[in-house]
Image (cartoon, rainbow over all chains, first blue to last red):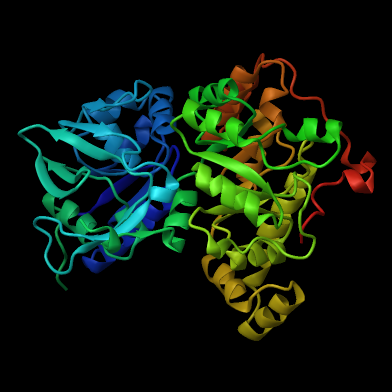
Length: 201
Length: 298
């Protein structure tokens, strides 16, 4: 199956997500019939079988999702959602900040800025369940953590402060930023889980 | 999880933080109340300072880093990132803001320079920096010193977008021009603009600056903000433009929406209706030499 990956382009590090998915698709042997593009309106969402919610400022993105009439269309989106950092906050059922209108697509409770301010942002090598090879080099920037997860949620990584990688059905949400490094193993896993498999030439 | 396995304050974390601001509006605020208005309107971050640039112009005298009490008041008031300004070259003001927990430091020509020769050695800090630039050479010198973000300088506190446009066109135009040069010509150009050659090659290859590039200095209306985005800015700083307008709440929301829909004139028209008066503007050509801020630092 071809990939039609939309990246929600309201605010945040959109181009890094586009580039990372293009790298993942290239490594999976996909040609130009698989695409990655920006999603700004409900009409753009119709063409996608996957959607990425980028990092950025979660209060700003949440406000713009509502303003642009994207809240219900994203909630009823049929494909898989790949969410990082602010994206993870938006995917939750419950958030520690009343200004966020969470999408409720993954049964998790999330704390924003769980580590503190930018000076507490960090990089570390993280063990992720079900990821083969070396630990994942994870980049946490004013990152959120999951403080509780429902029974349908598959917890894939945890550190002292809480859960930092989860999956539920087709969706994956991460506290950190895989799109800021070269490693595309998580994007590839996410796509394979949607039936977008590598093409062997 | 062992603390020694964590790395803090790396180049990747600094540039990563800056990239999260893209497509956003960063607003100048002088107290907690303004900070809350900015956050409510959808600002991605606030810039905490003692006085907005147009008041710095009026007051005269030496403009310095804000009172730490004020910075902490603003940090406590909002959950979005808080930035703060220090004087060019004043690395102790920067050390103070880092200790206070500011998320990004603006080494800013809007304040009175503390060092007319050297900028801050920004690689010595864990906190990321943003610096002003008027052209490609200036931008790359700042990046070479460790700036994780550039903002074109414009002419702060004038409410006049003309200098912001000039500086954005300079940088974007120079990068477009690089694509026509071979490597030797690029090396020569790097020497001419007093920038490291490696950074010039990187701009040519990526067809953009190696770090996020915002616009600042004179943005006063939703159309001004959208203009800067269409000229290639990754986002905008609005200084006096919000809290010197007659209706700051409305103006702040309208500028956020205009940046979000910068290429949709219908939306810009809609959000521009009934905003009241924008901040009063100044003719930059009538400024005395000592009133021009953009020439501070080079």
